Image 1 (cartoon, helix red, strand yellow):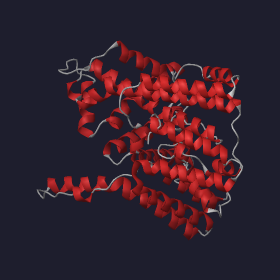
Image 2 (cartoon, rainbow, N blue to C red; image 1 turned 90 degrees about the vertical axis):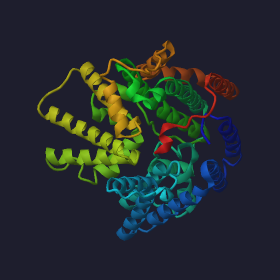
Image 3 (cartoon, helix red, strand yellow; image 1 turned 45 degrees about the vertical axis):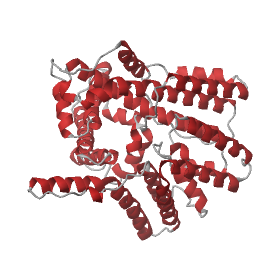
Image 4 (spheres, rainbow, N blue to C red; image 1 turned 180 degrees about the vertical axis):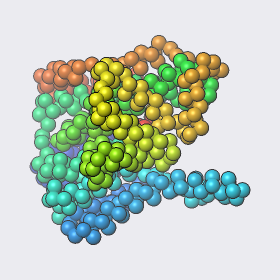
Length: 458
């Protein structure tokens, strides 16, 4: 089930109504939301509901038992589960290629397994729950329904934000009934998220990015540059759009999520970019990977090694493939290089620094988007090729959508606040009418078919 579909609209309308009916009864409210979340997940593949329940049980038991052995066993079980489902196919493909290079052809397709949607996100939440319980940051829950709801809560289940237990668990006990301001913010976020995904991201994908990356060696410099910019806009609007919708949907149910994007293409350093892009993942990586690996301890050389290793692992989290490993490694190397420049007293003017970071990030979106290393090489070659036998048509619509996507990173955030204030003045019935009409307009403007969100594959 995908957010921008009629199925989800009807599903959420029922859940919202039931949430109001059981609002005053915590046990019934929790049970209803768990049932709704598993129904939401079963729409993808009912077989993996048992896997999510198992992950939730491991997290619950691992948090209850305070012994270091219990913590190690539970975290190892969670990471191993993620590793098997996410990287098994990659290793089988690598072995098949190795056998082929040795003249020993082997068909290993029989050994492939399906990647459950959202597994990275809910396992990361499970890991953070266990670690925070053992660090004393949260009091472990004896009631398993609390942990099961925390792991499975459907607005953020398949693509984040990665919600911390310390932030969400208190809300399970006492959610906040959405007032006029909360409803206004939710309406603004949902409509903005739908616009980003259904209009900007989907049209750029179909009109520019997909055709260009399908035939990278046929593009010329102009179309390759346009496709690179287009993908930078597409992935931002696609993922931040999902986060906006998730935050808005949760808000209408009485739960507040932290912000997940903050105009990332305005960053004047790679470190600042990661403080603005997928903030919930960046802070998770910082707290549960970078700091345990050593963080800022030691000298500059050790710190640089730590950040490179951390970002390389973050790259592998995004996908099992050499392209993702290279993408993560180069981001880590870029952050290390920036540290070296700061240590040497080298500082670029802000405008030049923003341009440099944006260019670096856009170029690294190429291996992120490309299917393999060969396609990555072809696309980089196209960037310096003035002749193309099948260049993509660069229409005014394409350039306009790219402009809109980039403008979202520069327009004052006060515009959202202005819309929120205007909506907050309306009664609840009119707020609902604005949301309904806005959803109808987005569906009318969207292309036919359902395009999955990019981060569902991670």
